[in-house]
Length: 411
Image 1: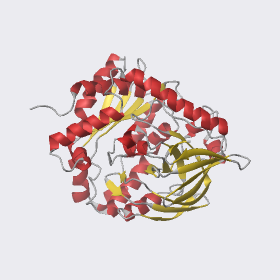
Image 2 (image 1 turned 90 degrees about the vertical axis):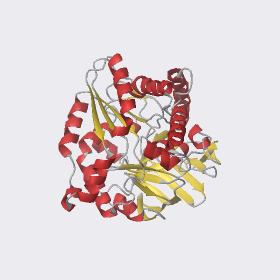
Image 3 (image 1 turned 120 degrees about the vertical axis):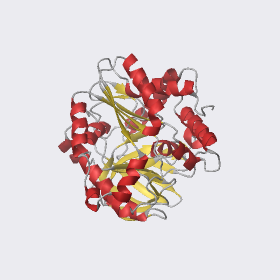
Image 4 (image 1 turned 45 degrees about the horizontal axis):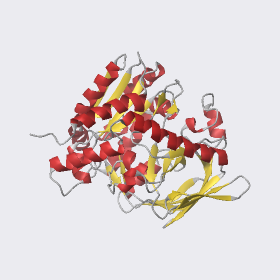
């Protein structure tokens, strides 16, 4: 039987993950997480990591059937607990300079038919327990990366009219194209792409906008930017000095909003897949930086529970700019996977900010991040707000307007 996944390109993806995504250094340990379906990519990445001189490579697997068993047979009180001991251990590994790699391949609708109350409680418990691990990631304490593998369940969601092999092959090709591993020299291609993203970040940092104003269908939103914010995109050094590309693929430049300076209303332009459930047609209204009203045509209960996770969940931790002409957008594929769909459209994120997106981020404290307007939360959830009709103006410190996007493209 012919494998629908091009094995040569899968090997290239493993090389890109280690060389470009992680920038893995000799002697550095690596902690990987992946669903069982992604084992073929895990093995290739493990091989590449050891070839690059990795210390120890440790993989933690998840299993969709085991996850469903919990929701169908687990004791009710278990949904208010999570494996804090595991996250604490991973946090300790990060403190010892271990790198982090996650492989995304989950079925985006895995929990769509499960009890929304249990899903919400489990997500909240996991967000709280994973704080020691997540803190090191959002602060860019270590080099980390996310790549994707075309599992059958995910492929059938994206290409529902094709048989399984065809769907997997199509999703694989889409992942490879977005990740630039369908090119002869993907490592060099990533080097050129990173230069483009760095140039956009430099232009935005030179303007030092006080705020951005988004307008378009269902959207009239002003996002104040944090004091001493810094735009980033593509490759960047983590606090351990290693240059990494956290997301493969990536088309965005992003920074930190001011947690109390967001006003207006906005609607989502693509569905959000959130921990195995779908949230679609989000409409939100902000006052004083917080969402005071939010609705969704699909997944309303899960959306509400997500926004009620903690005090910071209703405020923004990220704003990102992506042109409508990005390769992922032009592919016309809806991936039902945030890492891909967010790179097809401008987006915002509820919850935790990235302390890396501040000037002098290497030495900035949590207190300084908060004083500058950075948000704190147990969650960081991106959702898409950009389209071919999105206009964005930068508002300078003196109130002057500078066109940033017109009809979904850089102005």
